[in-house]
Amino acid sequence: MVFVGVNLASLKYMPTIAAARAETSRDPVQEINLTAKSWGYDISSRQIEAGRPVRFSGKSSDTQHGFAVYHPSGRMLFTMMLMPGLTNPTTLVHTFREPGKYKVRCLEYCGIAHHGMLDELTVVARN
Amino acid sequence: MSIASTIVQNTPLFGRMFTVDKSSGLEEINAWPALMIMTSFVWLAVAGVLGLVMPATQLFELESDLFYTTLTLHGAALTFPFTFQLMAGVGLHRSAGCVGKPVTGWLPAAAYISMNLGSALLTVAVLMGLKVSLVVMYPLPLVGAQMGIWSMNAVILGFTGIYLVLACMILFYPLLVLKMLFFGRKRPELILSERSLNDPGMLGMTLSALTLLVTGLPLVAVGTTLVAALYGIIPMSMAAWAAEPVVFQYSFYIFAHNLMEAMALMVMSAMYATLPLYLADGTRELFSKKLANTALWILLLTSLTSFLHHFITLYPNQPAGLSYWGNIMSWGTGVGAAISIFTVFATIWQHGLRPEPAIIAMLMGWVLYILDGASAVVTSNVAWSYMLHGTMWQSGHTMTVIVAMAIMWLGALYHHYPVITGRNLDPVLGRWFIRLFSVGGIGAALAMLAGGAAGMPRRYADWTQEGWMLYGNLILLFGLVLGASLVVYAYNLLKSREIPAATGERVVPA
Image (cartoon, rainbow over all chains, first blue to last red; front, side):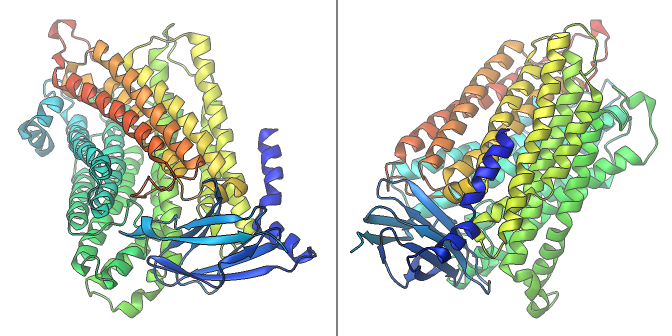
């Protein structure tokens, strides 16, 4: 029962489901493109509106990197694996509910300054 | 006298722990396993020192370079030349005694040399600057050289070392096991406890060797191509396909994931073989051989494709359907584990247990293995993977599976030790080892999992960014307890006493 229950319940967290929901939502999806390279990120926009779905599309230009977003309380919201050499970006749709400063960290070990690969997103209240 | 026995006998300190008993006529099944086990303890000592340096770099705010150097070496030494080599040594001794065939010839020598020479070369490469963690993080080695962080010579040396270690795990060791099980003449004087392939204790051994061989072949193809290109044997353009990160990563995890599953199969088979020998009523039978074998087959079939859970967060480059398949198969391994847990408990409930250190250590490893299984199914779930991948949760999972296997094999070694050396271990020290190892292993696992759930990144030099030092201190504390337990175990080996000749009995291992 646990086996079936948990795995059926987790279907709604599948990235395809989140992406489909975003497509059918009344709010237009905010697109954010990012490229990771040792040891930083190029991010198309660091300002996000709360309550509006955001599609993160990420690539890596050198080695393997991560793109993990942390809630201001320190809790991790999600992470994405960015592998170099791929034609398509890694994507994920997420809707931020609360305004605040959200830290970004690389969670794929990428060398001697891995722990310094940090960035920040600002989620602002909706007008 | 075998060359392996001679090396053991002439090795300072560690040689005293494993000097082979030559009076029993079993040197042909004792010598190479003794050398492998002894060398695994040398690497354990190296890993222990490195494990102490890691927190010291943070405590004294040394260069993060040093943290990543020790992180890479500590992880690699514990996983490959310690745990795998310990398993290989004890496992070979067990197989040889079950089928009555010697562990001699070029294959054990090739397995031993490739594992230890490879590990030594990798160590030198890491000291030369190559800091890639124990999972290589390809293409980091090449990118680091391009960025001038380490030299191309370090990359070539490191890749050569990794290639030799893989040659041991994927080719020499499985071929040695399969050769022993299926070929060669049985010698009655070497049989300690005869078993057929239908016995759960032997079936797991066979499935494990086949898993290593089959799932490792893609990585052998990729690794051979890359190493050949690095040495200029073939042009780089011919190795372009193997140098693709996605090709390397998938072939790496098809093997690396199944390496852990193969080691789990091997350790389950050791449990199935050893438990009946410690039953209180002397029946020497499992509750059900059919159930035990079913668990092994389920574990094998589900684990083969569950490696896909490593790439859930790569969506859509790994399609969601494949990720979900990896999720379901990972949970499927839990079905095999549940059946084996039932078999073990039902056997003990039905026949009672003689609580001797060898079997209690194996059962404590079993408990850790179950705890680890629970952490594994959580992180392999498509929903939770997005919140746990890359955190200390996964380090906790990896560390716990290795620690669980280590204590189970140390328990199995406790059982085999009298046959190999002709000496007995002290049961009081044996029980202290189990107590300390259990506290350290379970404590470190829980501290790492809690840190991961709180978002603490793995392979990360700076734990002060979000107050993760609390978890770091707990990991250090329990790590020290774990280390103390191993010191007790080693001390027990050092002060082992000869079995009185008057008993005249042959100690019968699994």
